[in-house]
Amino acid sequence: MGGNPTPEDPYYLQARIERRLAEDPDSAELGVRVAIHAGEVYLTGDVPSDERRRHVVAAALAAAGGRRVHDDLAVTCAEPPTTAEDLR
Amino acid sequence: MIRVAAVGDVHLGGDACGHLRPALEELPQVADVLLLAGDLTRHGTVDEAECVAAEFRDLGVPVIAVLGNHDYHSDQQEKITELLTDAGLSVLEGESTVVTVGAERLAVAGVKGFGLGFAGRSCSDFGEPESKAFAGHGKQVAARLARALDGLAGEADRVVALSHYSPVADTLLGEPPEIYAFLGNYLLAEAIDAADVDLAVHGHAHAGTEKGVTAGGTRVRNVAQPVLRRAYAVYDL
Image (spheres, rainbow over the protein chains, first blue to last red):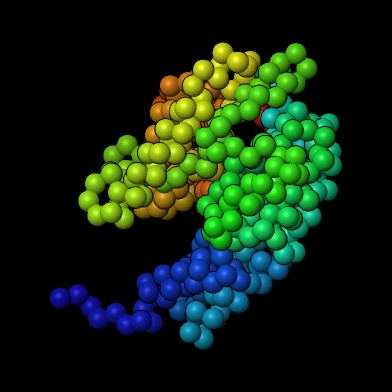
């Protein structure tokens, strides 16, 4: 027999937050990575705007069971490119 | 030379509306056409599509798009296509279009695409109805791309294959390998390699890598905006 994981096991916590980020209409975010370190939640990845960032953090907090959520997200750069790639 | 600008996964809506427009104002100086590789909206709503239309209309260059999985989320994909078309965009799904740039002609074949996976780790059209539906759709969309590409090289100087899902695993590097089957489909690459395609452009894999190549040697570029980390990329063909 294996161990006896609980719903608060980091493995299930990570999966629960990932599902919440994707399925919560306010976040609808499939591209954010969730990691659990020392019982705390870390969010990384790029989102299109500040509002979206706030929604993602709120959705993660709602699923994090009171754990601290670290916002290591970035808002995607919308600057034009400085060079083109030559594929001729 | 034809200068092809491309971006995907812009996920417009809410306060992201207008986010790209400043960078797009100078587009005619650096590109001859703009390709949009799907996931233009966040939830696939008509309100978000109106934001997309405002962002990409009247740019001074042709804009050619495919939709992505997010654009299907609210079952409004037909209305979104109509709305974007009314704004002057070409929205392709198993179709192609040709644009003239100076004395040259660029053909673009577009399809949303779907998952299925890659050699050694792909799903089969077998078993439960749900499994068959998943794999079957992956096969259908690749067949649609093959039909759209058929004979296209004879009509243009350059051919681009545009999809949301990836035709190769190369450009997924950075994503968890376990979800590759949901990110791309080797049958898309097989269709591309069966035609004379100069460049394949896709999005969908936010944590992936920009540059890849098909088994047959066609260049592939993942233009998901989080991968590019800029408003769009430009490729000289």
